[in-house]
Picture 1 (cartoon, helix red, strand yellow):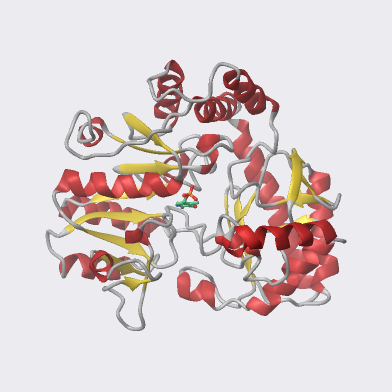
Picture 2 (cartoon, rainbow, N blue to C red):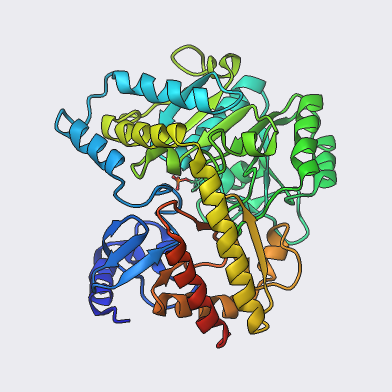
Length: 428
Ligand SMILES: *Cc1c(COP(=O)(O)O)cnc(C)c1O
């Protein structure tokens, strides 16, 4: 395929935007080459600036679960836009989407809307600290909760329990309040809690990890976290920015049958507009300003266009609950097809899948945490990525990302994708 215009646009962008992009993974650093500039999209397809058609497996990193330019969402936004785009005053639609979200998701009475998943997670942690009166938090290596300071912490060599900043600009003081644990390792979480008695406000986790590729939790792991939180008076925060309104109407809580204390949302809840949200039972949410002392605010929070897109999206999902089964079936079909294609060329791989999240790891052993995800062969991934792209299939430009399946994909699209894997696998 030819990407002449994309490359020219990227050169121009680099002069005025750092790295030419407004979010780093878009720049293709992990796979090499220039990013593709998209012109428009409809359903399961992207059309780039050079006129190529690509089958999209990123879907704006999750939000377009029903496909691009979905008529219900687009119409809702257009109607609203004609009536004014922002007021900074309460509007009825905020209550409508809040009531719908509360009715769909278990264990939440109230929800507050913000503008991104980052804001949602950052605010959830502040609320957990304000509610419990404790400072420290536990997060898991390889889980992403947005780019706010307390989350940009990774395990330094050996020092698993004391975080060191992952980015210049994050202070050591902030990093020290974030304790790191290994995903799926309950014994380690228990020992961290025991050595920080009465200091931990919350444990924040992606209930199905999606930011180190897709990694399912073991059943006993999430149940174990719930039990530890109950014993030690710690809040369990499920970051459902990726899984919320994707794995089920009620997200991972519903699918996996584990209750969280605070839940964060993003991606699907905004239907493709900038929306995040956090929610909990009433006694916790009432600690937020203006009812309580924990401050949180936003000039554009609850923006009418964003709420219109989100409400249209959630309404579609609420009224057509078969979508989740349909998504899971398509993802399973894809999983089987890709596994067969890779096997036909003896390509070492491990495929993880939960609902409509799936990732192909070029690793021999089971991928259960960040270290085992990092064992994957990145050179093989790069070849796979570019091979798929040459065949018109757009997957995330990093081995550490899940694929986001959209219900707009037809079985013909899936067959086309699997046929591409057969072609590409011969060269891996
Ligand atoms: C995408 C994501 C975020 C961050 O959301 P933004 O809207 O990009 O700020 C947080 N948590 C998880 C699990 C995510 O996948």
